[in-house]
Length: 146
Image 1 (spheres, rainbow, N blue to C red):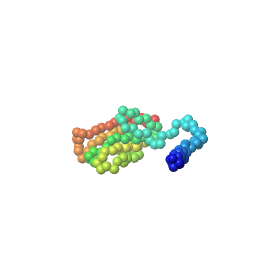
Image 2: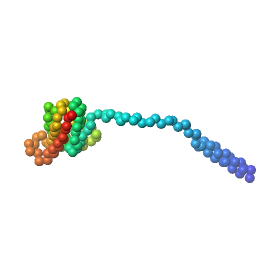
Image 3: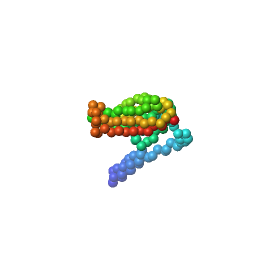
Image 4: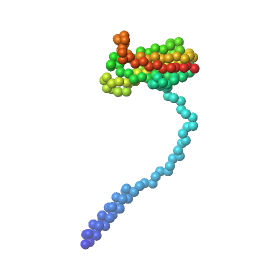
């Protein structure tokens, strides 16, 4: 009977020691929360447009980007047309979003307004080696330079 009491006491002590180790520690005092800035942050780059229904308005000297779906592995490419007296094509690029061979993506055209005016940017998605491509897609973007 004595050995049973000793075993029971040892078990109780072990449970209490384990429970004491698992006891929650006191929380650190709360740090004061800093208020968010009241002024909105400036955009990190040029505004991007993807839909022909969007009106593009930019001041002279400011750039904007037109991005359209593309897949050059199909033989199709975007041909761009615009009034060079009002706009300047700053950069044409295809940002990489996948490492898959043959996967479609996005092609982007960055323009700068160089003179006040009202103009259009035309994009034709076609195979350059076909004169009358029946599958040609045309997109038109209205641009106002202020």
